[in-house]
Length: 277
Image (cartoon, rainbow, N blue to C red; front, side, top):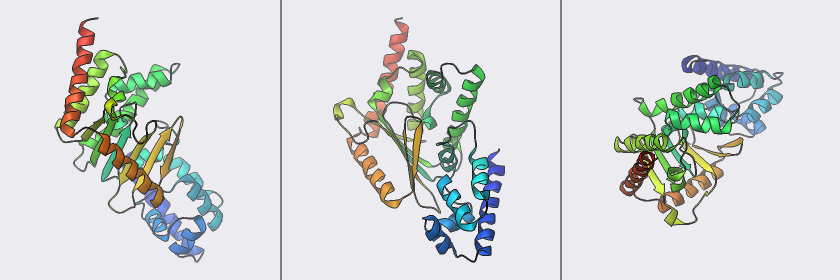
């Protein structure tokens, strides 16, 4: 489903929610209390500013007695086979964000990946997949990255642990190309990239990824990911705690200039490694 038609479908979802809510004689605040979100969130769902999580859609069906309508519609809209079930809603939110801040402990964030790097990662996690499947996954990742080239691109921060630079995904030349791409993105002020060096020692979030997203007309969210699972958080206390962890990572990182120099040095190391083999 194209982005335009998907947005129109979410607008229909929201309009239907408003119709069914008013038919039940409930205000936004009353429905929100019954499904454990704020009335403001219900208003944002109705205007298609924010997309609900699945458990909220299910509770809306229960409260409004809509026989699973909102759950079924949610599953159809979120069902993008290019993304894992737990990530599809996040990919949608990326296109709406005004600011995205990411931390990556071991793998280059998807928005910064090159095709060869994405291909190597996809093949490593899907060793028996068909070539067509792998290329579909790579295309999806490249499609996501287009938001950083759009006129309305979000302010984008990426904090990488030095591990990201040192793990030779796809081989030396693929890594050199990948690091060149990150460096070019930073030099062109498309992204602000920082590196937490090995010398920093222990740091906040040593094993998990973190993505913070801010929006023009909606509260911020945090997304964390583990093995074959992800958590999209919009509870203000959890988002605040996630932001505090990100602030600690930023404090442990090298300056933008020193980070860029380390990235470029690592890329050159890979080129030298390739030339000696």
